[in-house]
Length: 190
Image (cartoon, rainbow, N blue to C red):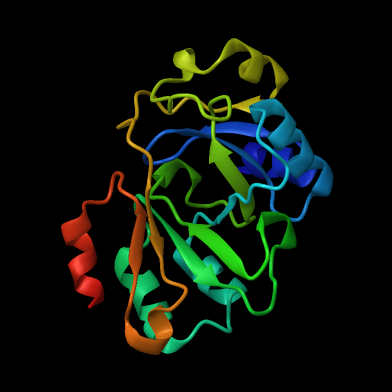
């Protein structure tokens, strides 16, 4: 979707449908865009956000240092309603954090052609309820974004967050937030 990529490429913030809830996105390498996203959301600047890719192969290519066990886990779980916390020894995407990186690859066919990684967060005021319909997004947020994409009504449950930072060394993982991906779906990991 060229309009989405154009928006984030020029430092804009897009309001878009994920496969779970509505989100805000800025170019993952755009300091100005990420700063605006945090300001629009009212999110503390020191709180990390996840990097989102819209194609699994793009995510895997961007993180070549991931071990084979971790890569296989990503291939089993993504795309889907899960955010994976991964080791980040190369400190890739520094605007998203440091030694760890949150990774999200949603199943959103309308955005499957997007090749630009984005830093993303849910489209609600920091600490507020997740939003399943564009019309329910806080009017102040809507007034400040550069692009809105209406994806209809979404499931409304945020992604499941899974810590895979120690997965390569022994297969251990921890569910940090239960969400749209049921815990039993993670049994395939080990």
